[in-house]
Amino acid sequence: MSDHLHVYLIAGEPSGDVLGMRVMEGLKKIAGGRDIRFSGVGGPLMAGSGLDSLFKMDELTVMGLSEVLPRIPSILRRIRETADDITAKKPDVVVTIDAPDFCFRVAKKLAGSDIKIVHYVAPSVWAWRPGRANKVAKLVDHVMCLLPFEPPYFERAGVDATFVGHSILESGADGGDGKAFRERHGIAAEERVLLALPGSRMGEISRLVDMFGETIRRTTAIAGPCRIVVPTLKSISNEIRIRTSDWDNILIIDDEGEKYDAFAAADAAIAASGTVSLELAMAGVPSLIAYRVAPLSAFIAKRLIRVKYASIVNLILDKPAIPEFLQENCTPENMTPVLADLLRAGRERDTQMGEISKALDALKPGDDRPSVAAARVVLNVSDK
Image 1 (cartoon, rainbow, N blue to C red):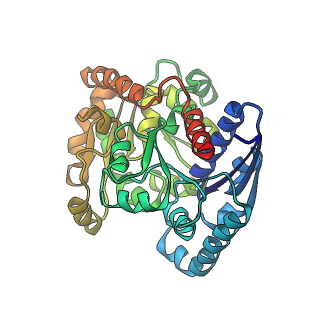
Image 2: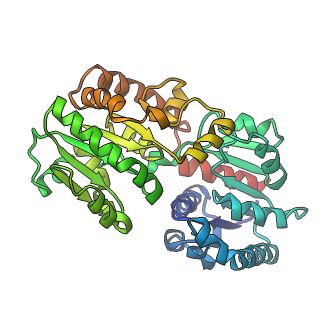
Image 3: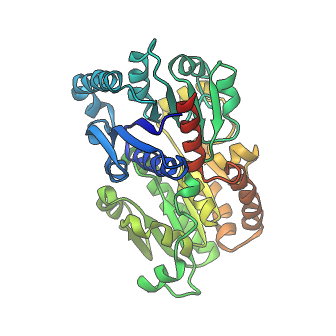
């Protein structure tokens, strides 16, 4: 084992920048005094932890077909440049983080070399297109999985895989200050707070926000008044304000630093399907999940998706601990009685809270934090 370790990391989006930074910090903790060099592609968080980035990660953070198409030539060039940079630098290990469209293309160009590649955030082969596991197995040496049931899918395809725990456990979602949030915004201690989280993409917001508004109106008519808090992003906050202008007693929060404080202040939540359901679970906020996609997308999904639930909590428990209202079931008539029960601290709330704790325990990788567990895998692969 050398006294020097060169780790090449590739992240293509802000969430990957967070994971990359945590892995880098985890490596520093467990490397036993070894001199570690970090290079690759990453964002400001990874740069702050010592990454020498080949180019700005922003070039890869592209959303939507209309934005992607004009940039395909530059993205293809960056794939070639990244693969050439890895070949020239010969790092001890390459860590590709999510962003499969970019990362796996880089890995493909490295095929046949003796460069070790670890991929962080396993593709959801258990949800759809299980054959992807075989393709991943041909490109990387090890897969780091966020969910406990994922490794067997990749091991059957012939690649080593390790459950390293879900990164949400290090998000701080359970560390908000609800009392301070209420004081800042003039919310009395006895006033109930209902979170509304209709998503972060304009497509999902346009399909859900009116549905949320009607459900909330019906819920408060049954369960009594409450403050409606909508945590959102600055980039879409104006659109949210326009679309919720007829909501009563609403407070829109677009400061990311206040998000978990708002969670800590909440009594219940109605949320779009996604990672936010795990954040709410960590914060101890009883919730229901609602989602609708365009009819064509729904038609295709029904033929491809192989799982019963949208929420990771429900997938882990294999039962609907968090109520899900998807597609034609996503209606105010269906959601109102459940949301009212959650807001009034009824039986649904008590049952959900007990089940959530089991799911969160299942997301822990033993005694390590997820970032340290991931760092151990990277270190082990580099030393083989």
